[in-house]
Amino acid sequence: MEKYQAFTLRNFRSIPQIDQYLSEEERFAIEVVGNVLPFKANNYVVDQLINWDNYKEDPIYILTFPQKDMLEKDHFDEMAMAIKGGASKSELKLVANKIRLELNPHPAGQLEKNVPMVDDIRLTGVQHKYRETMLFFPSQGQTCHAYCTFCFRWPQFVGMNELKFAMRDVELIIAYLREHPNVTDILFTGGDPLIMKTKIIESYVDALIDAKIPNLKTIRFGTKALGYWPQRFTKDADADQLLRVFEKAKKAGIHIALMAHFNHPQELQTEEVKLAIDRVLNTGSVIRSQSPVMRGINDNADAWATMWQQQVELGCVPYYFFVARDTGAQDYFAVELERAWRIFRNAYQKVSGVARTVRGPSMSAGPGKVHIVGVSEVNGEKVFVLQFLQGRNPDWVCRPFFAKYDPKAIWLDDLYPAFGEEQFFFENEYKINRKKMSGTSRLEPELI
Image (cartoon, rainbow, N blue to C red; front, side, top):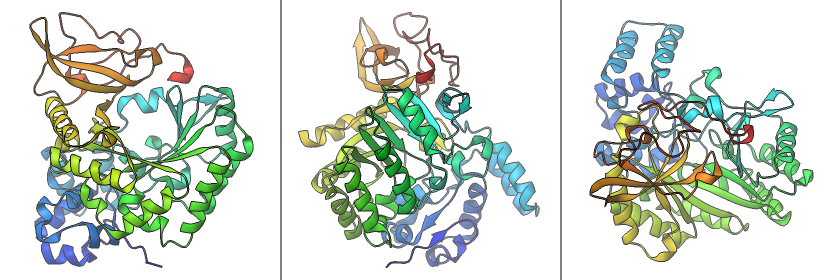
């Protein structure tokens, strides 16, 4: 069994490649940024995925190791000064938390609008934004094998409990599913739920199977494990048991879908990940792949076309092409909406129909998943053509609408309605504050 070794701020300088390749200035930058945004890597990522001879431009290095410009200069300087000044651990935490609260830790209203109730009990480990899908954050799965520097779930990992989604009580989950017969899918998320021991995963899955909830059709696992630690499915002590859990759910009539996060073709090159994918698919489960487009990592059409084609060859289903969310290091990774659409379009043109299952570019914003259909000219005005792939109100889905063209726009709240309209059609129910997503929804509670 291959031994798993994690690297965090406490021991990252012990990584041989860090000592061999990085300057002291670069190491200090990792320490500064890592005190604000979470940092974690492991020996598989470090040894097998990163090209250290070209680490400054290596996408997996940027994806896992904090970079100086991931913080604004004022924030970086504030933390750097505290570290150099010998601040205590508690003092550093105060500085970090102050900065974190300025980084929009819970975008798209997820803390205020997505957390439901059962019998007057607030389900702190649940989000329910879209009618058919409920998100569950098992408390034992709120970490990852390694952290992505772009991650919009970074508040789960920084020790600020007031910002964290997590719960253990599966009976409340079952009660909620029974009360909401429109929910067909439960998405285990985090963190990474597949970092949990199989016996814990099995206890949750068994409870859902035994409950015989007629509306529950699919259990999804949002996971980066295939990319960051494929040994979870091949060599870990309980890997075989995990695959048997998937098979058991399948036999019980519940579809298992792994929502796999692959951000660059490099993650698909090792024999370990290929074996892991094959073993998962042999259980009757499906692997759907998704990623945001990010500057410096995958902001070119060739990377996406290659990744989709390789995923199809391995049996995965390309699913979502996202826009980097408006939180954390968004400014570092941001790709303009028009450029994101052109990258998607050019990549889409390079693959056959079996890879064109992917949808995007998509912004997971407050009102829903907003699809950038394209840039066009309508009645003499250059516009963004948009539609909802998912919406807080299901009636919004697949309804075209238009925004004024803005070449600098990177998110929904940068956009304004076209043709002299005062607001987008959905704003009576979900108000947009430009440059800051917020507002009060008038939807039914199960949609909020």
